Length: 219
Image (cartoon, rainbow, N blue to C red):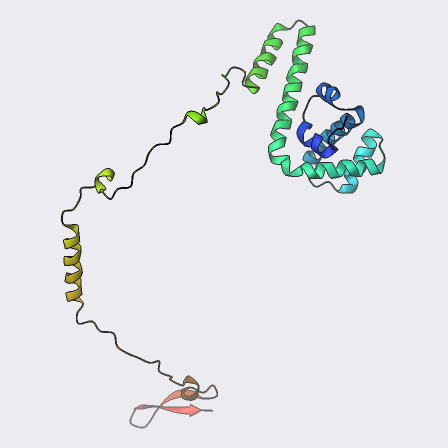
């Protein structure tokens, strides 16, 4: 029997329960998924972690060879684009596991109040109190017919009688008002600023004996 590769399994079964994984896949592949799940969570908690730190961490936790550790790193990196959507599912899965564990511990102690609170929280988290959404019968939906019209009444606008004549009258009116406006030809004037105001000359106002001001060019 052939199995899909590790990346495909991890994408589809990253948060699947361990018991269900063992029913579907061989032990080596299950161990791979569990390691990737654990290190995926490590990456969430250590977003600035380096590849070397990742390899050292997974080798220390699981006692695997560095080649296998780098293989796990490649799988985790391929799953990182799923981080936004998958992290919420992961935390929901963790919460479910904690609630189930809390319920079992309370059941052993015969603590009915804690059992009730855990069961209520579990039901609320998984929305078991809501009815399942029914599929929309797309094949039974009728397309609404549409018909083009130029009648403004469909928009609640009163129609204007003789609209074409009124448009022609307005055009003729504004054409008469602008009859004196003509387009004239013009050309740009070159003032030759460099010749009129050379950089090496500065004009300074002075006064003659009669009190009249004149300008003396200072080089």
